[in-house]
Image (cartoon, chains in turn orange, purple):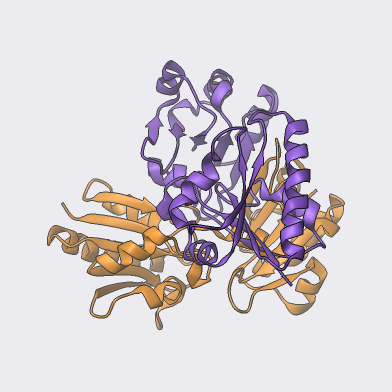
Length: 227
Length: 227
């Protein structure tokens, strides 16, 4: 039976792939990955140097916006094509930025191919850990709790949830920095916040929230909040 | 200037070290790691096959209990010894299970050696991702929030915090399974829970909460709770 691998390629530094991910990429004949309408996308870029020549590639092309319709159509078509490869006896490795199951696109593929193939997931280094490493920021010790939450939530809910934990990692912060600033000012934790952009990549940046607001936030950034 | 590396060796499968961790281990002349009073400890066991012959080893020996006094003394003495190596010009790699900054022992060393050395942290695959991979359990999509929390918290607080998120990963569940069961029963989420023991290791187990209670929980286990 052919196997579908969900492979976390890590946060951006190509050296942060696992040995297992590297081995599987050297063995499979088919790879798939999410991609924008043009270009190869971040997951393939990260793993590029490990992809052997001549493998069959299945890019799942979608608009890189919050448009679920475009994404769902891409996952439907991609799942069909992957399924054909699996039924032909070819193992397929699906590449995901970070970890496959933490905000990872592999989840949508797993939903569609569950029961159709043997599935093995190779966990990856995810962006909160890479951002913490960049900022030398302890995420948790002892009995502390960590909240991973998209910054898209409403202001009151963010305030309530962040107030109840020692550490918060806010995802997708790009357009939400002013809101985050207001929440953290209310909680008295503005000086405990670090904005980390493109963690582990060559152009990684660690800034205070005010510096980030002045510069302008991007989508591939996190805000780490301590206490 | 010599460098102190905090290296995440991942959740247990030696293949889940990163390429970067493997490279650094092949380059340094001194390694350090937390260890029980006898034996080598889990972090060194995971990385064992990557440790070259002849490196200097600094085991930080401590009672593997919640006894902070024993641990603090071990970190104090270990930090001194590591500092001597750094001042002699030798890079030192400190090995941590999982990720160095998420409940990682490197945090205690960083506190002590901050300012004394250049510090570089190599993030690792952490146990929630490995447990999710084992259980084929999506941690989060879209706007969902994930809580990482030690099961040592009180029953009312666990209930309140888990109720406010889509996904919870409970750490250190060993002796707390009955309490977790009561909390999840109240929240109507008992059937959304997976107990995962020794994720990614050869003797990995994925069980329902009731199966885990019958078998008995261990310290190196997580409970993943969906919604």
